Structure formats: C-alpha cells, structure tokens
Amino acid sequence: MSSTILVTGGAGFIGSHAYISLTQAGYEAIILDNLCNSNIRVLDRLRQLTKQTPKFIQGDIRDKVLLENVFKAYKIKGVIHFAGLKAVGESVEKPLEYYDNNVRGTLELLDVMKLANVKTLIFSSSATVYGNPATAPIHENFPRLATNPYGRSKLIIEDILEDLYCAEPDWNIARLRYFNPVGAHESGLIGEDPQGIPKNLMPFLTQVATGRREYLSIFGQDYPTCDGTGIRDYIHVMDLAEGHVAALNKLFFQKSGLLTVNLGTGRGVSVLQMIQAFEQASGKKIAYKFVDRRLGDVAECWAEATLAEQILGWKYCRGVDEMCMDAWRWQSKNPYGFMEDKC
Image (cartoon, rainbow, N blue to C red; front, top):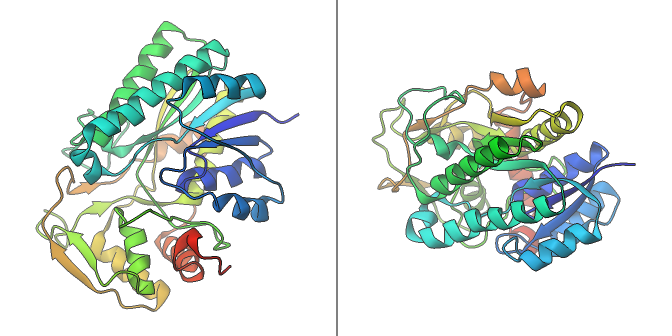
C-alpha cells in the first residue's frame, strides 16, 4: 500500500508539479490549500495528467482544528510543506503577514503533526536564507543572513526545525533550499499562474510575450555582474518536483534525521541572458525597461549543487532552453492562466 503524503500548498505552482511527481512515484497525495495564490482549476488539470481525481481540502494551515481533522481522517505518513507567502518585495511591504502566514502556520502544522505522531517532513525553504553571500556558488554551510522578511521567515522556520530535531531526534526532516523555480509541465496543462502583476521574472516574460503586459521591468542595471543585471540559479519546476520525491524516499527508507540541501543547477544566469534565451525559445521579442533596484534583492545567487546528488541521488536534467520552451508552451496555451481553458 502506498504512503499517504499531505501536500500543503499543493495547488500552487511548485506544489501542483510535485503532486504529479509524487503520484508517478507511487505515493498517494492529499492537497491542502487555501487558494490565496492558486486556482481551483488546477485540480482538473491534475486529474487529466494523472488519470485520478486529486483529494483536495480547502483550508489554511493556521486553522488548527482543520489540521487535526485532516490527520484524523487520513493515515498520513509524511508532509511536504509548500504553503506560504513567497514574494520578496511584498514581504518588505507586509512583514507581519509573512511572519503570521509562514512562521505561525508552520508552528500550527508541526504541533498537529506531533500530536498525530507523524514525524516525516519536507520543508520548502529558500536560497534567500543566505542573504547577500560574499561569494558564489553558495554552499549549504554558508552563513545565513536573510535580507528581507520573506527570507527571514524561512530562516526562522529552519531554526525551529533544527531545534525540534535536537529535542526529538525521531523526526526525519529535509530542509530543501530552492533557488529560482521556472518552467512548466511539458504538457502545457499546468504552469505558473500568479495572481495580479507577476513578481518573478519568468511569468512576467511570458505575459509580455502574450501581450498581457506592455514590457518587462528589470530591477537594476548596475549590479557588479557580467551585464549589470542580477544573476540567479534558475531551475526547472519538474526537476525541483523530482527532488522532493528523492528527498522523501531518503527520509522514508533511510531515516536520515535532519537534512539540509540546496536544490539548484549550479549555474548562474543573468536577467538579460534569460530574456535572450526566452526570445529564442518563443520567437517573440521582449520589450523591457530598466528601473531601480528592489529592496532586499542581491546581485548574484547560484547554488553549489553537488550535495543533493551525493545525499539524495538527485541532479537537475533540464536546461535553460527547456525551461523557456515549457514556460512558453504553458502561457501560449493558457494566455490568461487557469482563468481561460484553451488546452
């Protein structure tokens, strides 16, 4: 019998792709999502892709009674915790919302997991916990000094999980530090569908290409990088999803304790380089304008990614061209995201 995994935030961009990888790996996944930054229509797309109707619970991880009922109703063996607010710029403007949603929500989840004696957890962390590192690539043992409330919320949760493990070493926890997830499922049925104005590069690029946005704003052109624009480690969302399955297998079958692993490609790509790659993949010319830097952004950030291969047996396999092609396939088939069915 397959293990049942609760996927918090499972209707979102990364969570929905992870759902596919989990079902392909033989796990039974239950999605819990409050739909604050996702769309209920993703469930029908997941049904088309997996040939099974997703088990879905609409609710918030800060609702302890709801969580208790979920753990009573299902024989959950582990949790993948995606639920959380995730925009750097917005976190600077609304820090209390980020700490309440991300930190308090995680505390409620951990408390209910403990009561239910479910002690296997994969936490969706972020490279933002490293702040503005002195060098790149970034190793897992680098100092952590987040430069914005979003990153600090992730850092605080990481510390909570470490304290929990030290107090109760029967927990099995993986802290997966993502770099910059992009792309979409190769089918074009699901992809990134932000509400309102996109806050990340790739969905903004795709919306400019479809005509939804007039131009792309590039935040900063005077960074100490190869072309003055910020450099990031972009990773295909399906590679990221497969990294979660690898981590889950490690926790279940080897009882690995507390793991902390970067999920990235180990390659840095500038904003201008990504625009060029997207133009080649889509055949569209992207209009852009330079604007001031955003508070909390760093010049360059890419992973030292070898530990994931050593510990999890996982390595990315999709390059920038595939990231761009899949993102464009999703957006061109769904110019208004899940609000318009054209698949």
